[in-house]
Image (cartoon, rainbow, N blue to C red; front, side, top):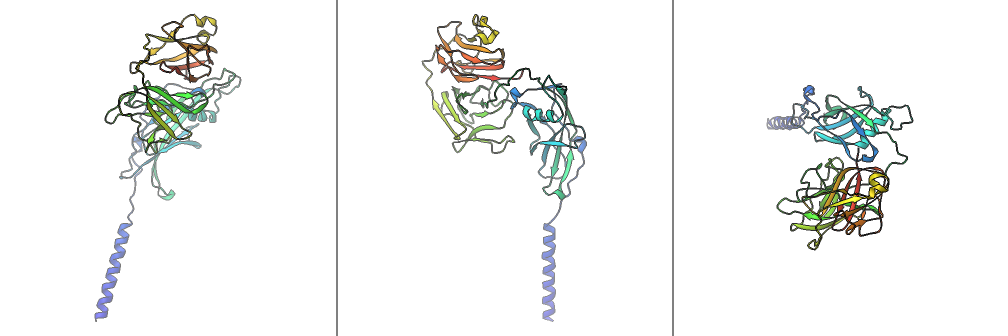
Length: 385
């Protein structure tokens, strides 16, 4: 009789354990409903003019609202671009967990080329047309368990800027300051001061200027204005950058006291240095401008200066935006006089020499122009017209 009782008890326990295991292996069912509420929320331009001169710049930041699967679970978003409304063939532009993504001019130009657009005025192919975008939201990792929704479709009218020059300008990387230790604050599309790129090594940069300090005050660097990633900062005092998708975001740089510093960046070696700079004996100028044949395309450009704007944050930083220049040369000078001037020998960026006999070479394009009167460093950044 005791044996029978023991057998019944063991069977009961076994059934109990089995029931617990089955309860632990529950399955939730995500709903693909409410797709009508899964929409893009960004405003779009009437036409997007795409130029290889600004290939790394953001063309459009796509923003959408959250997809609702009726369960609390992480959602992935796949931004798709296509050349037809059917999306029979599409390009995955991003696979992120955020509800926004910035697409570069380069990526959009690739789609435009796949759509048969062409920027060669000598061909019959059109240089403008439509591109189509949508977001696929999905949950689940295995193919058999994935539940998905699709957003509404967003149509963009794009135009490839026709190539009228024989040779395009070379493409260079840039770095722009961002953060509340700098003039721009934490605004990625403000008046973000650029670092000067070493003309001999495009992965080395430097900047000398004013920085603020305080609780939670710091700065980082952006590769492209208007895009938060990739961004450069530090992790454990080692130069570090985020991915284009925003992963591995670094910490900010900081300075000990408010004042002037020289920041140097070496992407090749993943190193940076911040050293104090004594600007107490620096000259304060009433005006600085640029002058030269690049302004007019001939020697009449040497007659009058084009005045630059002085920074209200740092009086030693001067800039001029969206300036159309011709093939030619220019120099910078103070107070419309040759007494204090800066020249150089390298195009696009360089270390200007005080009262140099050399003129800075310029290729025809539209530029943002920056000069630092503390050291003569200059940079001309091509911009889209």
